[in-house]
Length: 308
Ligand code: AHR
Image (cartoon, rainbow, N blue to C red; front, side, top):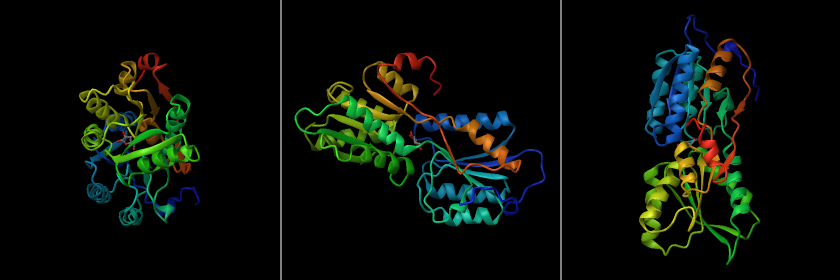
């Protein structure tokens, strides 16, 4: 795919303030709230007028929002897609209206890569690999394979599929570790709680490690485990993705063992990309955010300057 921005493809509007339509996934997690705040404040600082729509985790609402942005004739549409498929029709409408689309945080599956200009977000596959690397280094098989419970995010969302794939890829060929149970908790606190409740109702507790695709589900699981007298962080090791302040507090309290960072503060990079685009500059096809892995050894120190 040619990454060069073809201006003849887009209608440049004659006005002083850049108008951006942003379709957000929802408010499902602390990560998402920090992400929304970052986008809104970066738009304010850049003097960009933001048309912001929250879809409450529903794809139809995102499609509706994009159609509204097209009617409003915004300069750029930014989509953070709740799921990865089913976007071709509406993104073709945006292209036909001459409005460029950028993807933020999550990617889409399409045969036509020309439907969006760039994707700004984390490397979810690598996050999955990092989680499994930490487990392999810190939890050793004793009596048979380590039994892992996976709390998956929203089914059909790119972070869910990729965090799963990266984790499994890192685990492949290692007979000491096995995913014993895997369920979707939809990236929510309640979802994490419910998975633990269901498991305890149906099976004897036999899990060594919980791998949660985000902090909210991990913290919901911690809450449910403690209610059943299972000590999170010691009876069962818990690893999650995001690295929010609440996750750091849980590591300081000894209830979470590791947080693989996923940075939600995408606003400044995104607004810079929008401005570059409006100035006719070339955008890279992929903009990856820098991230780390934290555990109880550095949680207290890092918490002091944690911004989300
Ligand atoms: O797409 C990023 C994921 O979505 C975050 O890990 C999760 O917390 C959010 O809901």
